[in-house]
Image (cartoon, rainbow, N blue to C red):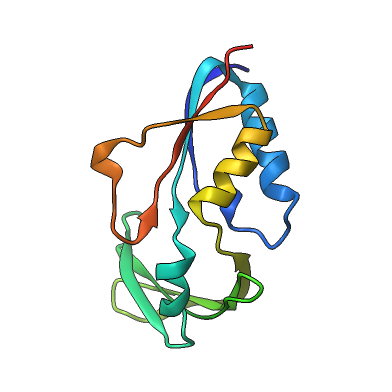
Length: 151
């Protein structure tokens, strides 16, 4: 399968240093020559201090088939020395009358990856840097866009 472009966020959410490289290589193989990879990343200098062990509540997600909602929250701590964030996420499914249908608690552990580190990984995987789209420039995220090298 050859594709023109892809948007990825999961390649940066791993504790392994080899996983982002293998993910980038797999994407590079699937892209047509000149195809684009755009990856949004956490900016460790900004996002790291926000992961201070406090619970973060996220917007409920409507479940159209049941009329219920999925509520989720997370709390994580960040170790700047290792670059690792870890904690837990909690998901609660509520029915249309706000009664609990399901409750799941999951441990999370991932590495915050900055733009320079990601671009080095992407470059080693056959990509070259191009300008990020202006509309994607967000203050808390580095949003590099890289394009596959012509071979």
